[in-house]
Length: 233
Ligand code: UTP
Image 1 (cartoon, protein in one colour):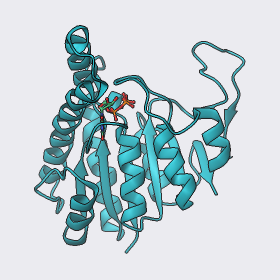
Image 2 (cartoon, rainbow, N blue to C red; image 1 turned 30 degrees about the vertical axis):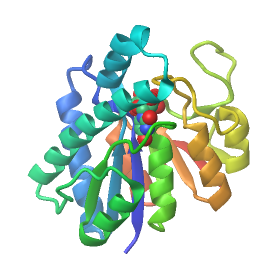
Image 3 (cartoon, protein in one colour; image 1 turned 135 degrees about the vertical axis):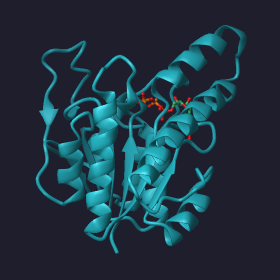
């Protein structure tokens, strides 16, 4: 049975958009369809607005990045719980626990069709967790569902000349996101450089796509051509 891990950027559960209930509902439908066609799915959910809010509040008093990271991790687990409950309501056999480690998540994946988790420990983001889980569980690929349509050569918000890529090698993606080091808590690259480093070391394919449109997530899960960036060895 094919396993796919999906990193869901926390910004996808964004509070500023009215249709977010529809987004969550259609995500559930996409996961149900994928499980019905024989896949196992692990979802690793990012911290989004509650992470930003919590880190922002505590930042002036806290020097240690790892301590801020723990606030971010709590937010990822809150978001993971929301996604988990929505999937369970959709009738899926979802692990009851929100695993707190890669080993725990791999174990749950042996017994359930779907596992949902957030972060694990300080020092990286949920992209890196998703990529590690994909490697550990022998997944065929890791989907990075974010809020941009493709990987760009530079940040397209500050550089209108930035080039968008349909395909990259893992080495090329590492060049774009930079060396595998942890950024300041709450700041982010299109894909966590630490995760990209591990994907490179283990030859784990990545599909980077715009998760705001759940049809694109579905295409990637179905192994079809999708709008986004295919990152391969
Ligand atoms: P996210 O995975 O959401 O990071 O975790 P991000 O990439 O900054 O945010 P989005 O999803 O793209 O908007 C939020 C924060 O939680 C901490 C980090 O500080 C991260 O920035 N975190 C998360 C950890 O320290 N370890 C983890 O395993 C996960």
